[in-house]
Image: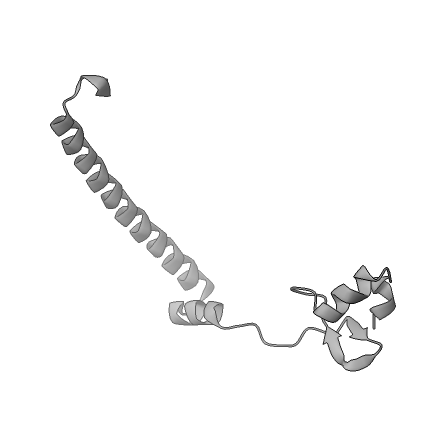
Length: 102
């Protein structure tokens, strides 16, 4: 199809039809995915509600402390996420982070 031969009105009509088809296909894809997920949950013997709710809840359990400030034992870091300011200052001062390891 040569789009350059179409009028503006024809292009707008085509764009509307394309958007409708995309919406229809997205809806169909969503339904197919939902059916597949339900079938897998049923085969595994897991209620779909439990599968969804368990996936939304944060993981229980604490992560062990990996680093501790020798100048202030209450300042601890698991090594996950952003480095605390005291760790950053320690490293920027030229000291090895391994010296903070618990």
